[in-house]
Image (cartoon, rainbow, N blue to C red):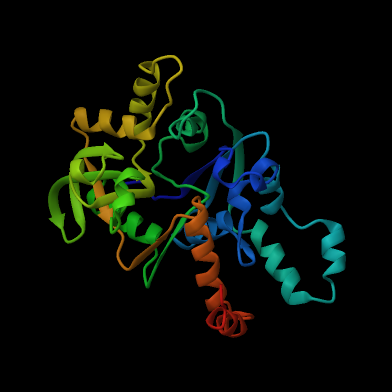
Length: 293
């Protein structure tokens, strides 16, 4: 079985929920205190053994490429008397091998899969968003997914348990045969079913780890897409299930999902990480504690 070395991050969306902020700035670059959301995702990927990261962008996402490039000579010169800060910014560009592809094709979260096949090749890869993230300890979310893929040899979905009614109209849900605690072999995937129609409380969030066979079904799903319809990656997964391909849903252990593509959840994440921040956490906590609205 090939080692999981590659990841794909779709980052071509317009981020309309954060307008006007995202009119010219990518939603993936929104900071959680002092670190862009997408950098948190990349660091977790690298920690799980990922070496090559393909980011699928649009015309308004150039700042993502700039962020993961080496610092400019001007910035390097300015930081020459701040070696710790210089090391921190230099490290960003060395996290992984980065490649960038412009998104082309129908609108939808499955379209980036059409654009990266020539770069992924016949290898497994992680497909994850750049505007949300999962904190899990002591084993990270991506490390848990890689471990699950290596055990079962099948496409693996990242999942959390839904705890709020609104979750059932925001995420997809999976059900199937239990293989181990928190692990099922998927029989059904339903997108945004509402609580009354959900097959389980196991929500599929923040991407998946794909076996290379997925590209056969990407082509099939794309060829059957009606004009004007969105191309969803869940349609690809459903074709795989119909063909008898094994898909695993893995509940991420000790997980806290930060849906930072949502305004309210983004603000909650900023507050939580602000309280935990090594430089400002103590003072920020005191301010929050005394805040009167």
